[in-house]
Length: 94
Image (tube, rainbow, N blue to C red; front, side, top):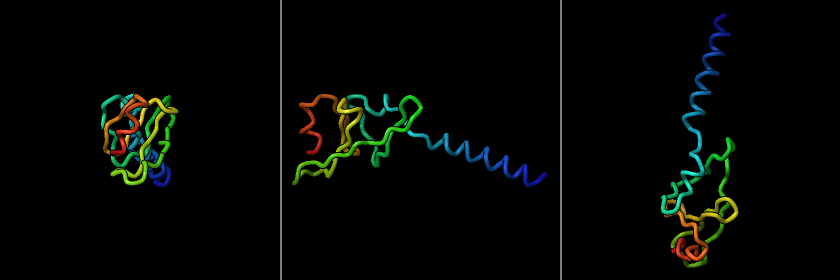
């Protein structure tokens, strides 16, 4: 009986921990002007985790890389502002 209770308690606590550490919603993360978290590991969309698509910034840029969301609908460096206009892409690595 104690073993069953221990297993149930462990499963319950593990489930709570997973919920507390869930990735934020993509719609919230990738809003124009929002600041991308640093470090950024992904977001949740339609109940699924969406990993970032990383790209290198041009050589000599202060930032090393930037994330692209949803096939180019938004871009940002970690700790930088989210931009949704392709014309602004060149400014996010500076």
